[in-house]
Length: 622
Picture 1 (cartoon, rainbow, N blue to C red):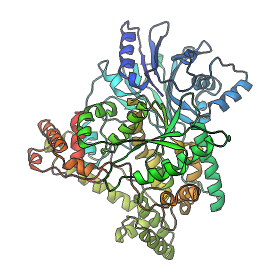
Picture 2 (cartoon, rainbow, N blue to C red):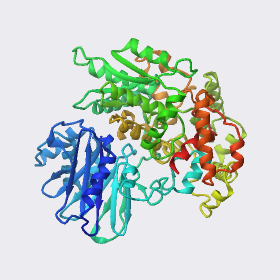
Picture 3 (tube, rainbow, N blue to C red):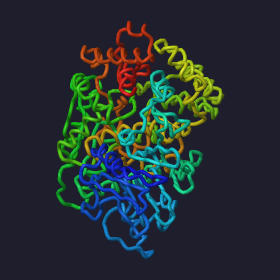
């Protein structure tokens, strides 16, 4: 993982290399091991890079990297199947001078052009300048694990891994009022209708699974194209046993690829099923060669005395597998002392203090000298792990006129003490899903315009944009809501948090559940393999049964990555900090003066109406 930046101009500017250096210096935390710059002969194209050395640690793999006397690349990420792609290209006559995946991308682009993206299993954001065609080709991975931000104006195109690099050279940091309103009132940190939109005007994000082409000579804006999507309608006929076998094979292959590294690899370990499954698989792979493998280094955030602390589950893994576990904890004072730094790295608002707990885990990995960590993100969205999916699943069963099956499944979930809502509204939604979606959208619209703490003057700033960013999908089956959360709203924001937190400490995070072949396979399976007999994430549970301890595999309580936010907010040090944030928002005309008379309402990290937390974050971005 690294940091990339670029400046493309209509006419030469002698200050461009200076500006580029300032950009890469600003994101030096992403690549503390090396740096490089390249400019073309006309001084109109300038590419910069900060390197975090993971594969081929030699100077030969330094970027920007040239290829075939034609291409230059700056690249952030990893291509896990690069050895297989390289072998194919070698058979096609290509020669390689490095062991890096960077050179493989260049050769693949030369051979396949835009279709090279279909060949990659990986996380990436890269930009390739073709000096012959005078064209920039930039792309982002399928799920959005790696960021790519850009600004264009008057034929100029400037891009970077983080927005702070753009701000460092004078691009205006102007807040988008509608995005801020939706965040405060609804908790949205993205606009699912316009994935390019950020919290800042004129700064855009290249959407996941898209590539971009910019040709300076045309004096036209960049052109963006989608190159991959999930077909949520595909269904295969497969037995449960065969599905578990194939899923296990795909998961094993995904973990295997994500262990490719020339530096030590560890893993996050929350105590939940997802991270535990990864740790199990690594343990099996590392011990399969019958040699005594070193202990896998794992990293956890624990909160003793907190009701949702997962220490006992972590200890269960430590007792059963060849792993060493390192733990970190935090307090309200720690959060306050680190909040400015946390917001600096995150750049945009975030929904809860869970982001700080994750930040501390990557900090711990840095202290222990582990550069690469595998993590379980994506499993809940793909495999239906959240309790909020239960009612969508039940509505699908009911809509197929399976009244008896619906009752059986409802009773099973209740027996397992799973939290879900079910009343006449859900019955209505099962048979009139489009009407249900419209009603949910109306509910969100009313939340934005009727929030008691929002200043009327601030509401007026979004006049004409009232419905912007408000969208609910039409859900006729479980796959519909899983697709929405995986590709439109939900997963990408979690990936953004993880990218900023890991790169803040110069660490790389890899996500085995986001192998695209694995995801496509899971989406092709019937809902009953994802939710069944009162269990969420049924397929993964069955795949891990008798491999992991039962108290992890068949655990009924679903806990997100959660610190004791409610008790933290009850402490004066954080309550006072939040009040100062509210005063700042009131002085800026965003909140009413009356809102300052309200007491802070301490809430858990995943509470729906976490307004005071949002005030705290919002005050740091204006």
